[in-house]
Image 1 (tube, helix red, strand yellow):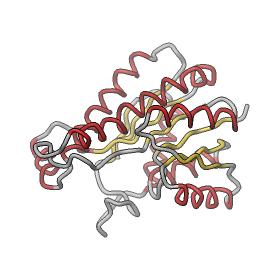
Image 2 (cartoon, helix red, strand yellow):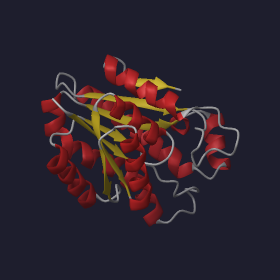
Image 3 (cartoon, rainbow, N blue to C red):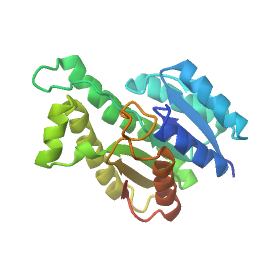
Image 4 (cartoon, rainbow, N blue to C red):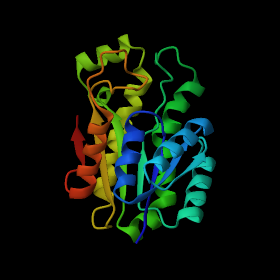
Length: 227
C-alpha cells in the first residue's frame, strides 16, 4: 500500500532532509509551509530524485488552514501514513515585553496547529498504523545554563513552546499506546547546517537528524532521540 507523509513547516535543513529520506523509502511527500515559492522549489528538488511530491501552501498556525490542508492531502494522495511537524515561531523573544498576539503566535504554531493536524489525521494514522514525528530543540530543557542562553538569544518564547511541545509528545505517547500510532521526537541540541540558526559554526548535518527520525520510525520503540 502506498504511504504518504505530510512534512509540516517545510524549509531547507531538517524538513528537506526528512522529505528526501522518507521519499526515497517510497513515501509520497506532501510539503506544507506558507511560502508557495519555497514549496515549489522543494517539490522540484524531490521530483528530480524520483520522489513523488506536491506543495500545499498554508498557515500551520491556523486551525482552519490545517484542517483544510489535511483534507487536501487526503483527497490527492489518499490516507495519511505519517505526519512530521517542523514548524516553530521565534516570536515572544522577551516574555516580559511580548504582546498577547506574539504569545498566542508561539503556541498557535507549536501546539494548536500540531494538535489540530494530529486530530484531523488520526483516523488515517490509526488505519495505516502510522506515525507522528516532531522536531524539537534543546531549549526545552529546564536547566539554568540553557535558560540563560534562551534569555541572551532573545528566544524565551521558543524555549517555552519547545517545552510545551515536549510535554505533548510525552502525553500522546501514553494516550496512543495500543492504538497502533507511533509518536517520536528528535531533540536537536545545536545548530543545523544550512538553517536560519547556522551562523557559520553549525555542526549538525540535517541528514543526521533525518536519519534519527527514520530510526525512530523504523524501530517504533523509543519515543525520543537526541542529536
